[in-house]
View 1: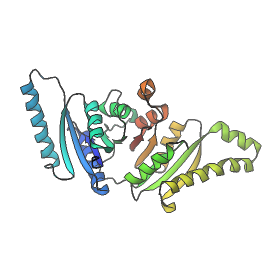
View 2 (view 1 turned 90 degrees about the vertical axis):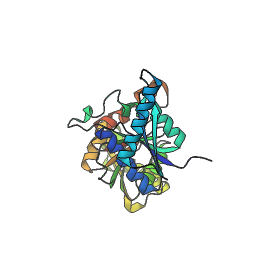
View 3 (view 1 turned 135 degrees about the vertical axis):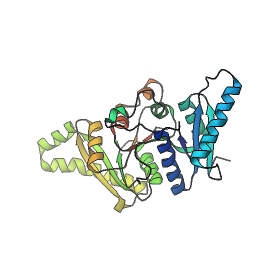
View 4 (view 1 turned 30 degrees about the vertical axis):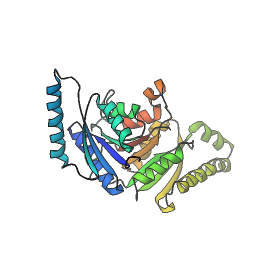
Length: 278
């Protein structure tokens, strides 16, 4: 029997970890999923007795901060590398998404440090990862979904719709500035003719994902740098979360993640949902 769909949250008992747990708890309750909170104890103790004592203490702390485990809610303490154990737990639990906290800073790029657990989970996980920056009290009302119209676009929209029911979706495709410029040089009619098929494709994707017309707004945006354009649109529309995919599948490509997803994950001031390829 497959495991009950769940949301896994990792915490190190810091403010960002608490934020991740609170966000996961709210989503799990809203979606009727099981919530699994994970804390990882480093495997660096001199004796097994010390390690077992640290594990027991961590479990007590989880229960004290998040309430006693019950049906629909579980506390798990693992021993090892934080990102590896989080990913492993998510696979065992059949998780829809892993929620990890991100340090907040006035300077966006300081909030997502290279080598952090959040970054490592993002690069090694095989399910969607939600980077939680905002307070869990802020509901997801507006979602920006950048799509490239590739094979993963429908999966991304379907996941976003299922995780954020009731939200308004701003679905955008960033068209290279060079393409838009060539069409503009020909005529205004040529520009419109080039954009309309893209808009229609975006509308078809939203419909296929089950997003009602009244909650889906589509846009074809011109962009010299799609990464910066996504951040600009997120600020302009005052979105609560950006949902995007990455094409990096394995090896060094997975480590690099992809310039657009990597940049947005670091620069966004909102939460960010990243969906890896199948």
